[in-house]
Image 1 (cartoon, one colour):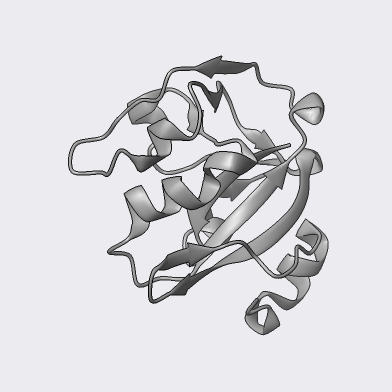
Image 2 (cartoon, rainbow, N blue to C red; image 1 turned 120 degrees about the vertical axis):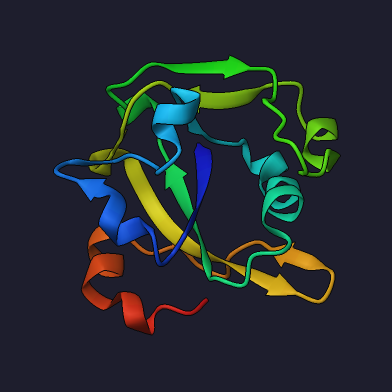
Length: 136
């Protein structure tokens, strides 16, 4: 599995037809993803100052129609570097994330010392059905 972090407030508006394309896709040319071992470090490095609720998309890369390449991290100015020590490569998806590849959606919980892994994942259909009720 690979994972993608997105602000909850942005996610429903970015689902187009059968897939999801993040707002920065045109700028980077791919969807930034992470392996499980790197997710928490990525969240802490890139989203430490974000107050919005973050979703974690659990993606089956074998179900993606777009090409996935495992490449060196693309560091962004002002972000931390802890995630680079967790993995030498990160999955970059060169196209939309097909809704059918999303195996689950969880909420990244922000605690005093940073983010923690979601307590549970729900299906995309369940999330869209009851997104206001999913808190953990």
